[in-house]
Image 1 (cartoon, rainbow, N blue to C red):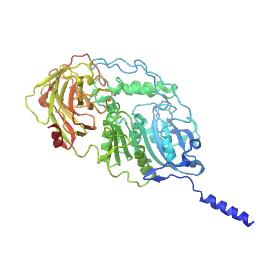
Image 2 (cartoon, one colour):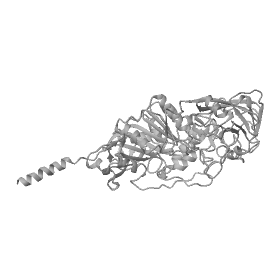
Image 3 (cartoon, one colour):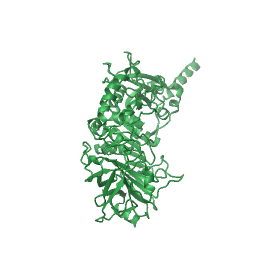
Image 4 (cartoon, rainbow, N blue to C red):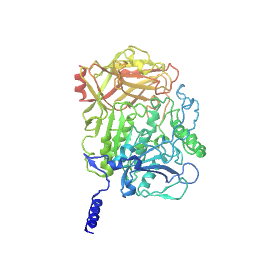
Length: 604
């Protein structure tokens, strides 16, 4: 009997000594916990969360399809964990690339292009899995991962609106459900409810491109429970995505795309409800709002600009973007980062030198989520605000700076001298009587080729002397230009380049293009109102190029190239429009780390 009692005692002691699996933190980061890192033990389930809007016309609140992946301990041991959440319109597939799906860009400015065709999306995917993204990174570290399809895509009800209110309210509803404030159901139209009893209610969102836009959209609702977001290359304004300073401009790589093209691309929802959505949103709201004739900023675009919606936002913001992303350009993150900083929110920004996409290092993301979702005091919000991958460095090893732009950057004004049809000069000294020069628009010459020509009547090119020292640029370059057009409308394109142009097999993405910008001279007074140009009359306008942080190496020249149509981005009218530039009244301000002394030392 004594032996049996001892066995019972030590057995009970042994059971009591076994600790339940729980998150583990080291160096301010959530660590992989072996008990959480068993995929076959993960619980995967899906459900539908009810929203407070109806965008498919059935007079019922739209429900969003949601998938959950969580460690089994949230069921067997009552463990409550925070959530990493990604939402997307792409999870259920996209439309095929068919002829006529993009707008024809070969027509005169101010004329209406041909109507586009509308390809259909065939939905893909099987329940209960919406996506496997984020899961292998975060579930083993003690997070629950949630996915949802955005309105009108996959098994989510409603309609896509490409930046409309429902695309902000849909993830808000999911976060409300995670916090017990909204209802979830086992089926799309049934009444059997599902509760999120396994979460603390603290949510962090992340994703890339459109998937990075949605975290910002959710954050602008001010929803309680959304503690932190990490948008990667997010589209923060559909106007800035499809227009530039009044100019109709395509995103890089997608010549002729516009909001309705993107709508067609993502509309993978219920086939029986697509006709309603097409009629109400694509063929009415979007068609009437995008205005491909003038490119002006209007109420349609204002309603799809998240900078206008930031007042309620309180989520901690870590942004990521590439300085050479010419699809969703780096201005998108910059403008939101600065606004969030001005609001006093916890903010940091990670910039790399590559193209579209590219999240921060996992360690940086881990610390951000660990601080704001688990409440671990790891001081991630303190210290440098900007992390920038230098030109030859590994993206996992960014350089820390106090902020972006670099606080040591000072604007330096460069003036135009001599013959830009050949190679004029960029100088820190302003000379008088430089005269006027005329270029002739011809989209058959790519900007890349124009920058390499020793002389051309299709562009004006001005360069600094060969640099004797490296020059570090950080921030926004701003051009002020005075011009006249031979026609009532004209494209205006401006590139800053590093010369001589490198076209060898070892060319790096940072070798040639420093930054770019585009504008419509018809919007010289206002983005909201175009005015036809009086041929031969001079107009003044000023606009920013895209933000950059780049070291131009010694031996190179900084070049400013002014031309008209850009065959990678703009509408492409018949060649022949003449732009005349008043050299005396045109200059560019560039942000030089160290200011004028640093630039003069490099140039002299």
